[in-house]
Length: 358
Image (cartoon, rainbow, N blue to C red; front, side, top):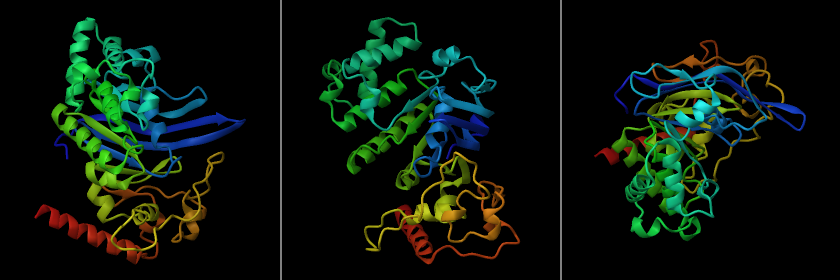
């Protein structure tokens, strides 16, 4: 974990809605998140939980039908600098000074990020010169260095090639090179390995971790894959229905999960050795055209209490690093143990981690 107390990004009570087909969807309902310099924070949850929307708001790339109802996104571009509220900053200033330069984003499918009609060299050079006043030759030299840094062999030859001439894993490396081209402080990775096979996923994750350590980056991963989280994260934020419902260190979340939704996510990780039927959380996430009454997860929660259907739970503090929004943590609630199968899985993970350390 990062050994620093300086906050790079702090999201406070973020509230976002979208107008679609005559309806208003309340997609983000009060999100709080903190990222310290050099840390890796993961945001996990099912599709539609609001993971990507929160980070797109920080980048200033929300669609036209989005409305920011409240909150703040405080960002420190440099160590010791005064924080800037990205929600109040001038959009033109964000485009010039933040997006792609100070905060960069890697998306799920590299082909949606790359222009198929331009060589990768042209795309890298364009990205560099859009933010820095340097010559084309200098930008070209940096592009070659970046390609080599992300593991593209023969960069002098391949810089003249087009995206379709590369494999999926190589295209994602190119997207990472473009993201790093202006030396950002913060890298946001939105499902960066989902479209790749397992072997290539591992290589891309190793690459991002290596680049983070080399450059001192702060990184946010947006993912539904808890296997990715276990490998790379320092801290984890579990999202459901537009809110963070559990937050903690990676150890807190994997070894001592407290929210029933987190229990379900961990139970749904495939275990090829057990032979058990793959678990899935029953039901579907709510459609947020109306704010849920009580706990949004209550209709899918086999451990729901009567109060869950009436009143939204606050965040209960478990430790200095760990908190969860579930009425099961109220001192008046009945004691509910985690599912036996999940408890067995947690103990197995502990043993495997201990063996790995040895």
